[in-house]
Length: 85
Image 1: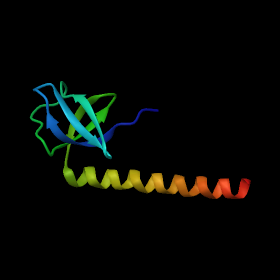
Image 2: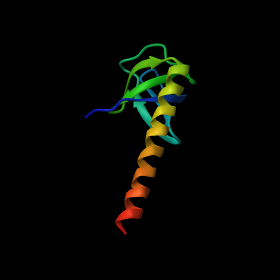
Image 3: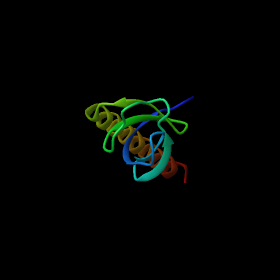
Image 4: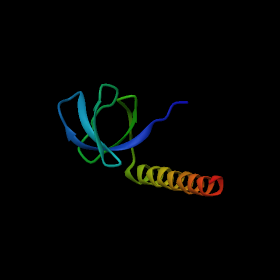
């Protein structure tokens, strides 16, 4: 399974690379496939490449859904671990 996630551009290194923030983790990615990216833009990132720009509202919605899924998985894991002991 492949997963592409929204990330906010925090720094432009040059025309082809940028640093993005992935939930507090900073990562250098390639901008070779996307044009006109600016600091503050959201991009969809997959295996180190920005695939497209994303509207900030849609990016925030997607990131919120990922956070909710993570919380649900953590709650389920805690419940499972609690009953298995």
